[in-house]
Image (cartoon, rainbow, N blue to C red):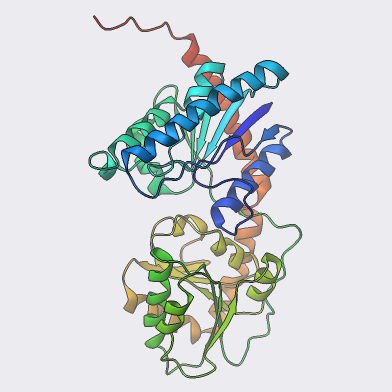
Length: 380
């Protein structure tokens, strides 16, 4: 089946590092593993950082032109998609192509990791939210990654719009390395995150405050990541003794995985994380996780078995949990073994492909049932 794959939040092939782009590539690979012909990068990026009506109107005008160009192209080459798949649309990045093209072509419409923000239904973002909701109602299937997203999508569940869980998953080119089981004399902590303003910087600042409660214990922290807020992030850790913090900057993905395996424990507060593929990556090499139960973090771990999750903003609790694992190498090792098993056996592309195969069948059936319904008479 020919599948158009659209990513309104980020351009599919721009090459920049992010979990969002990586998940998009993983989804395409999983669909292709099922034998489908996937067409990624089908539309432009429609992320809108601010809500000016003029900005939205410009995006809508460009989308309208793109719709007509794509339809004309497909009329000419006979290669129109047989299903439309949109990944990660929300009020700042509405899907301006999928609903219209799916209707024009009469094909199923599938959405993964969509979200609905009730608090944006009024005010500056209300027009954007209306567009998102039109798409949510038109979808034959919603694939949700986190329970937070599921809760927002429940209102759109109907006889012809299904909701199906697709847990975050992780793909590797080959078997990832496993953490050296020999316990280091000094526990080695590691974290990985871009250094940008907003939630990432906030998490770095939380981590610095949490670690300040544990200076009486031996540990080191390796920080992998870079960005425009690096100076501010480094300043947040400036009070720690020399040798406690190692700054690795931005490194290649294969080196990230190898570096994770050189450590004993992954710690990242994850304030308002969508879910965070890095948690799965760290578990895959055998690291236990310490984080907040924030955003979609809980969707990437097995609470109490592979990770210790504390209520969001409970910095004292996070410090206590981290301290407990620093003091208990045996528990760290047990959790690390469980973490690797969980990430590699339960959150792999084959499992995701099975869910996608079932989901596409549901979407096709829903679409057929929807089209079989008698047309509604116009309101008088």
